[in-house]
Amino acid sequence: MQEKIAIKVNHLSKNFDEQKAVDDVSFTVKQGEVFGLLGPNGAGKTTILRMITTLLKPTSGTITIFGHDIKKESALARSTFGLTGQYASVDEDISARENLMIFSRLNGLSKKSSQTRTNELLKEFSLEKSANKSLSTFSGGMRRRLDLAISLITRPALIFLDEPTTGLDPRTRNQMWDTIRKLVKQGSTIVLTTQYLDEADSLANRVAVIDHGKLIRIGTPAELKNETGESTMTLKISNQDDINQASQILKIELKSQPKIIDNTIVTKFKKTEQVTNGLSQLKNAKINISDLTVQEPSLDDVFMALTVGKIN
Image (cartoon, rainbow, N blue to C red; front, side, top):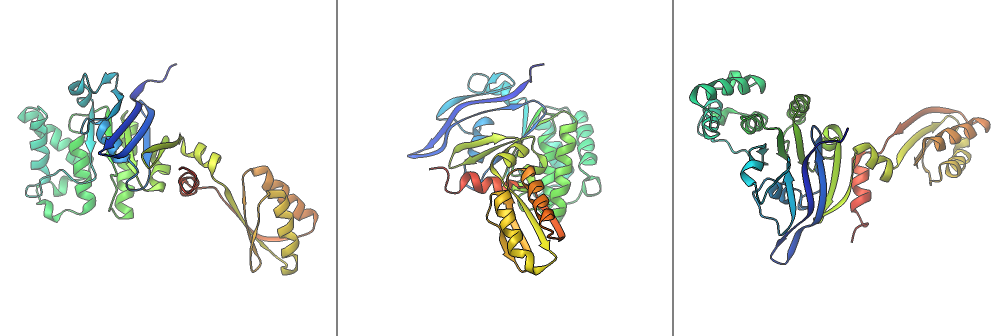
């Protein structure tokens, strides 16, 4: 069965005076997935998001959302999505309930429907106890949850989250991650921009790495890690006298230069069978190991491999 496409971006570019902020970027977002735009500050992530959401006019290229060309059918395209930016759009001088009521009415809901939807969202985002309090008493995490709730008033099929956890503490970040996973289970499609590599690794089905306005690579986190990252093996040698021989064996079998720290060897490898062969050779040489750990590559490793000194 053919996969349904939520967003299609084709040869998208954006120039600001003489500076090219986005340079010939193309990708598709499938319905029902979390699609991550990953890159450092200034990479072009937010500029891409602003063009897709019709907040910024592209210099060239085309964008369709659920089949609607944003140039020809901008109103129809906008009706399909919700957007949560990096900074809260809420009114600080009124309560969470009042904010939700106002935005509900602005989105065309009747007074009764607005009250119903407001109560639903307050409950869904665990804001019921603070619903009538001034936002000056809210934590950063509570404000971000409220901002996300506002973007979901019309139950959009597509949700854009621009660095939704920036500035949040680890506990609140995890709460936001749980909320995002819940939205996906309910059938939403999510486009997420982030500079947090662990966030993309945890949430995204696929990731597009953006650097200097260019699309560097796209794929699942696992694919990118397998393609560009190296795993690390750390093992302790029981007998200090065996350390140099063990290092030489691993250098040959893992095709990598090991590092020796006291009685510990740290080495990189690409394939699992290299580790198996290395450990087998150590056993044949009667070299005993007291401790062994293997760490898979992270998106940090992938990002450094893709963006540092490789793209001109």
